[in-house]
Image (cartoon, rainbow, N blue to C red):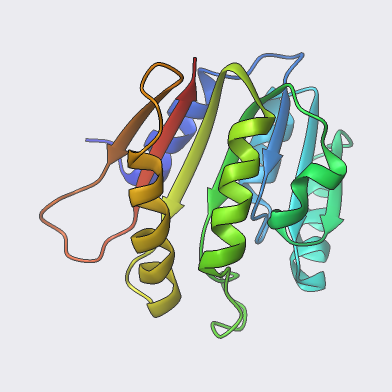
Length: 179
């Protein structure tokens, strides 16, 4: 059985082509940014922490990727930088791996960013959200965003929840496909 992140990448690959626009809404150390840059024409990557931008810049340079715009700003401001027509938007909520665990995404900003993402997605586009309920803010984000996603009109969106139900507080992903 696929682990969470392997399954997320499998789903993402199915929705990207060389002409795609993609967003890494929470760049962290740039792993998803790099993956997106290999399969999309243009990538926008967001993080509020300068150290995340530097780690991602180094990762992209090491792999010779130059189709990414690194943006030091909240994912709640995506609409300022991206007009729409996006094929894939990826979120990994929480804190910067290896960084200060007290600096996390927050439920209010994350919900705003998710709402913007639904508008930015093109028809057939995919929103991939990974939640980490094992830490306090991650649990709050999941408790706010998951019920919101459950209210989306099924005529316009399909929403899939992928989780291991026998692993308490383990990370899980929700995918939203726009019709």
